[in-house]
Image 1 (cartoon, rainbow, N blue to C red):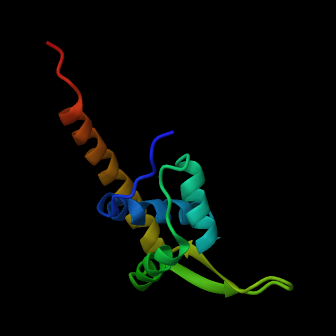
Image 2 (image 1 turned 135 degrees about the vertical axis):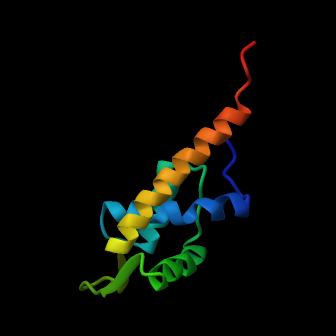
Image 3 (image 1 turned 90 degrees about the vertical axis):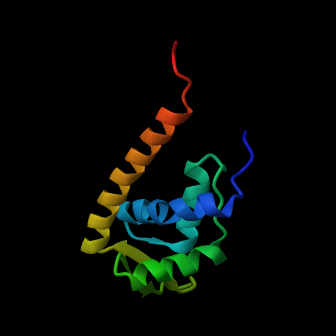
Length: 114
Protein backbone atom coordinates (compact mmCIF):
# COMPACT_ATOMS: atom_id res chain seq x y z
CA UNK A 1 0.00 0.00 0.00
CA UNK A 2 1.26 3.46 -0.81
CA UNK A 3 1.90 6.07 1.84
CA UNK A 4 -1.14 8.29 2.59
CA UNK A 5 -0.96 11.76 1.09
CA UNK A 6 0.19 14.30 3.61
CA UNK A 7 0.71 17.08 1.09
CA UNK A 8 -1.72 19.67 2.42
CA UNK A 9 -1.99 21.63 -0.82
CA UNK A 10 -2.86 18.57 -2.88
CA UNK A 11 -5.49 17.53 -0.36
CA UNK A 12 -6.83 21.09 -0.05
CA UNK A 13 -7.34 21.28 -3.81
CA UNK A 14 -9.63 18.26 -3.82
CA UNK A 15 -11.30 18.47 -0.42
CA UNK A 16 -14.37 20.42 -1.57
CA UNK A 17 -15.00 17.99 -4.41
CA UNK A 18 -14.64 14.93 -2.18
CA UNK A 19 -16.97 16.25 0.51
CA UNK A 20 -19.60 17.51 -1.95
CA UNK A 21 -19.57 14.19 -3.81
CA UNK A 22 -20.19 12.22 -0.62
CA UNK A 23 -22.87 14.58 0.67
CA UNK A 24 -24.42 14.50 -2.79
CA UNK A 25 -25.12 10.78 -2.39
CA UNK A 26 -27.13 11.31 0.82
CA UNK A 27 -27.11 13.27 4.07
CA UNK A 28 -23.98 12.62 6.13
CA UNK A 29 -22.28 13.86 9.28
CA UNK A 30 -18.63 14.89 9.54
CA UNK A 31 -17.25 11.70 11.08
CA UNK A 32 -18.96 9.58 8.42
CA UNK A 33 -17.53 11.79 5.66
CA UNK A 34 -14.00 11.47 7.05
CA UNK A 35 -14.30 7.68 7.37
CA UNK A 36 -15.71 7.27 3.85
CA UNK A 37 -12.88 9.31 2.33
CA UNK A 38 -10.36 7.06 4.07
CA UNK A 39 -12.20 3.83 3.18
CA UNK A 40 -12.91 4.63 -0.46
CA UNK A 41 -9.35 5.83 -1.05
CA UNK A 42 -7.95 2.62 0.39
CA UNK A 43 -6.33 4.60 3.18
CA UNK A 44 -4.47 6.92 0.80
CA UNK A 45 -6.48 9.97 1.85
CA UNK A 46 -7.04 10.67 5.52
CA UNK A 47 -8.95 13.68 6.80
CA UNK A 48 -8.91 14.39 10.51
CA UNK A 49 -12.42 15.18 11.68
CA UNK A 50 -11.18 18.33 13.41
CA UNK A 51 -9.84 19.72 10.12
CA UNK A 52 -12.97 18.67 8.23
CA UNK A 53 -15.40 20.79 10.25
CA UNK A 54 -14.00 24.17 9.13
CA UNK A 55 -14.41 22.93 5.55
CA UNK A 56 -18.03 21.93 6.20
CA UNK A 57 -18.77 25.31 7.78
CA UNK A 58 -17.19 27.09 4.80
CA UNK A 59 -19.25 25.05 2.30
CA UNK A 60 -22.36 25.79 4.34
CA UNK A 61 -21.57 29.51 4.41
CA UNK A 62 -21.21 29.45 0.59
CA UNK A 63 -24.68 27.88 0.35
CA UNK A 64 -23.41 24.62 -1.21
CA UNK A 65 -24.56 22.44 1.68
CA UNK A 66 -26.99 22.87 4.53
CA UNK A 67 -26.71 21.29 7.93
CA UNK A 68 -29.19 20.37 10.60
CA UNK A 69 -28.75 19.01 14.08
CA UNK A 70 -30.23 15.58 14.78
CA UNK A 71 -30.64 14.12 18.24
CA UNK A 72 -31.33 10.43 18.84
CA UNK A 73 -32.01 8.83 22.19
CA UNK A 74 -28.85 7.43 23.71
CA UNK A 75 -26.61 9.08 21.10
CA UNK A 76 -24.81 12.36 20.95
CA UNK A 77 -26.18 15.15 18.82
CA UNK A 78 -24.85 15.19 15.24
CA UNK A 79 -24.99 17.71 12.44
CA UNK A 80 -26.07 16.14 9.15
CA UNK A 81 -25.25 17.89 5.88
CA UNK A 82 -27.06 17.73 2.56
CA UNK A 83 -26.35 19.26 -0.82
CA UNK A 84 -28.37 22.34 -1.79
CA UNK A 85 -29.55 23.06 -5.35
CA UNK A 86 -26.63 25.47 -5.69
CA UNK A 87 -24.33 22.72 -4.38
CA UNK A 88 -25.62 20.24 -6.96
CA UNK A 89 -24.84 22.66 -9.79
CA UNK A 90 -21.43 23.43 -8.33
CA UNK A 91 -20.64 19.72 -7.89
CA UNK A 92 -21.49 19.02 -11.53
CA UNK A 93 -19.21 21.85 -12.65
CA UNK A 94 -16.41 20.72 -10.33
CA UNK A 95 -16.61 17.13 -11.59
CA UNK A 96 -16.22 18.38 -15.16
CA UNK A 97 -13.28 20.62 -14.22
CA UNK A 98 -11.67 17.69 -12.38
CA UNK A 99 -12.01 15.41 -15.43
CA UNK A 100 -10.45 18.07 -17.63
CA UNK A 101 -7.61 18.59 -15.16
CA UNK A 102 -6.86 14.86 -14.87
CA UNK A 103 -6.91 14.47 -18.66
CA UNK A 104 -4.49 17.40 -19.05
CA UNK A 105 -2.11 15.97 -16.44
CA UNK A 106 -2.22 12.57 -18.13
CA UNK A 107 -1.43 14.13 -21.52
CA UNK A 108 1.63 15.75 -20.00
CA UNK A 109 2.89 12.93 -17.78
CA UNK A 110 2.33 9.96 -20.08
CA UNK A 111 5.37 9.16 -22.22
CA UNK A 112 5.02 9.87 -25.91
CA UNK A 113 5.20 6.91 -28.21
CA UNK A 114 7.88 7.31 -30.86
